[in-house]
Image (cartoon, rainbow, N blue to C red; front, top):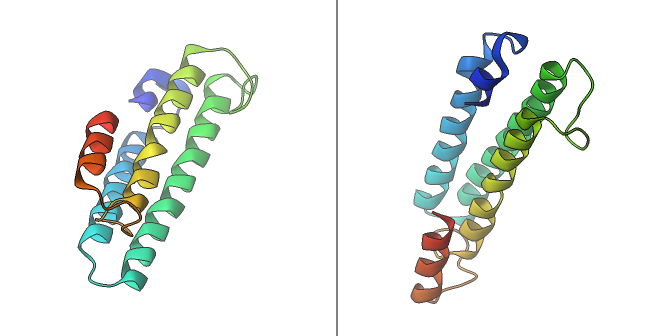
Length: 122
């Protein structure tokens, strides 16, 4: 994980917290798929998005810590920053596609398109 890549500059507790963020975000996403009504789906989805934003905040902090304040989320050229941005960018398409799928809010209901979309994302 990025925390291990960051080495001693990243606080030890984040070796547990950052993967835990991922597990809880995925749990909220799964919970959203099995909720019987739209308000509960939205609640689970919103909790997952809020936690994702928190995870991105900590990723930003880790970039700053790793570079001793020389880099940030929007500036810098280290491999650590690039890996962080890659991680963040790969998380974005999943919730967007989920919202459109029948498991989410059913904006797209063509099964073939949905399956191709999931295959592409995975």
